[in-house]
Every structure is written in structure tokens, then in C-alpha cells.
Image 1 (cartoon, rainbow over the protein chains, first blue to last red):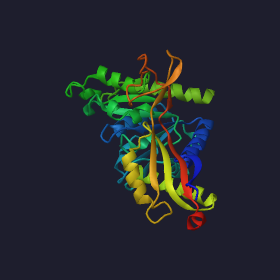
Image 2 (tube, each protein chain N blue to C red; image 1 turned 90 degrees about the vertical axis):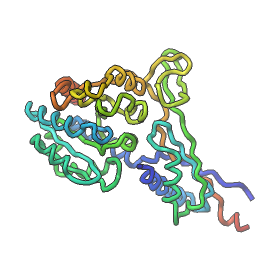
Image 3 (cartoon, chains in turn red, yellow; image 1 turned 135 degrees about the vertical axis):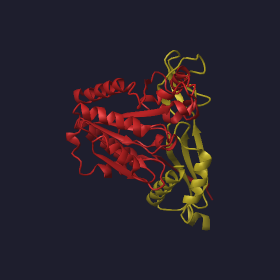
Length: 224
Length: 121
């Protein structure tokens, strides 16, 4: 009797998600829509950061929208909706991350061609969202000053897959004895050269720079 | 803990390959998991044991090859594997590099099949 027969399959486990996400990205970019996926641990201030972003973009007459993922409740969608832009909530009912098909389903009925920016606020989690491409062009990892400077070293996967990072709650930096140089060095250790915005949703610090970056990335889409 | 949803996909994918190969008894399932994939091998193993219950993969051994983080070192002009996750710097010369060439892998690599007819013979 022969030993076991080895069937080489070499298949990406998240192939279906990856393929859908790629198709979504092609479509978003074709219509000139910049899609941003916001990832961080719970409590980093994703919702506040996003709300201030939406308010400012809305104030400049830029058409934008957001979808927000949470295990339960539509609290975040209601908070974001006060910005005046269209917002939809995705409840994952226990799942710790968003997947491309959930996002696709929640975009139905929206005129994507009429939008310039779409934000996807992922479920607050520093591990699970890493592997799931949602079709975004920009992945933003957020780190609040209250979490400590070494989070990027503890969760390198999330920061490594990001395109840009934002430090949040900078208004609390002094109270937390937050060492921003060390935080930046740690981010640089897991993702050398990545751009980092130093922000506060409360004071508005750093948000103009963030918006300028978004405009730049969107211009690059429509130019390409 | 997203290992269970990944494990369920592994079983679905593996079942598809098994059907295409004409069936058989599955002795082992081999996976490649990169150290930057955001998946904990031990958690994946437990999740697979759970997801495999009542399927053709219930008795299969789970073999996980962990794939190191690989970066391009611009100074050495070659790809180098890192001993750990951070820093993303060449272990030989210390040059920082964000050019990651491997370590995000999450792949079903192979199935080890025993033909049932042959086994009975």
C-alpha cells in the first residue's frame, strides 16, 4: 500500500473576500470615489475622528458617506449622522471584523458616482480586521494617546497593513504623559516611512492636514 | 477571535478540493500562516477542530507551516527573513525597510489523501 497522496492545492483562504474586494476597489476607483477603512482598538476615538472629518468635508461641499461596523447597536451611526452626511450601520452580531460582502450589501442603493469619499469604520479590534480587504484605497490605523506608545509593537499586523496612521486625543497627551516621539518610532518600526497625523477631534488639531492628504489621494485616483 | 470564521472557510475550500479529487479519506490538512496574517496558529488549530466536526476532515491532522516576515533590504539588495515581527529591519545590516515581501500568507497548501479502496485492499 502506498502512503497518503498529497494533493497540492495552494489556495488563498480568503480568496473569495479578496476577489470581491478587488472588484469593489476597481469600481470605486473607476467612479472617482476614495474609500478609507478606519481600524483601531475599541475606544481609540474612531467615531469622533470620523465625525469631525465628515463635518469638515460636508462643510466644504464634498459629497461623502460612511458605513460603520459594530457588534451590536446603531449608536455610532446615530452619532455620525449628526454630521449631516448619509450613514449606515452594519451590525456584525458577534463577528469581530467587517468583510467585503457586508460592506457591499450596505452600499446598495447609494449613488457611489455622486460621492467623493466613503469611510468605513471597522469594528474596534486590533487583530481581526487585518486580514480582510474591504476594497479600500486607504487603510488608516488609529492610536489614541490613552492607549500607550507601545501598541504598534504589540499589534504589528494591523499597523503594518495600514497606509497611514493617526494619533488621536492629542488634547489628552500631557495628562497621559504620552511620549509622541516614542509612539512615532514604534509605528516606524512596524511600518517604516508611514505617514502619521497627530490629531485631536476635540480641538481639531491635525485635521486640516488629514483632509489635505485625503484630497491628494483622491486627486491621484481621478488622475489615474 | 476571527479564527473560527477562517477555519470554516478552510473546511469549505478543502471540501471543494476533496470533491474535485474524487474523495478519499483525509489524513492531513496543511496550511501556511504568515506571522503578519493576524492569525494565531494555536487558536486556528482549535477552531479547525471545531469546524471539522462531522465533516470528512474530522480525523485529519492539522499541519501549520508558519511563514516568517520577509522584507526587501535595499542595502543588501536581497530579500531577508526576520527572526520576529518587529522591527522591520534587516537582521544582517540593520537597515529599516517597509517593503514586505512575505508574512501575510494565509493559504490552504495541501491535503494528504488516503484512497479508501486502497486502504480496504
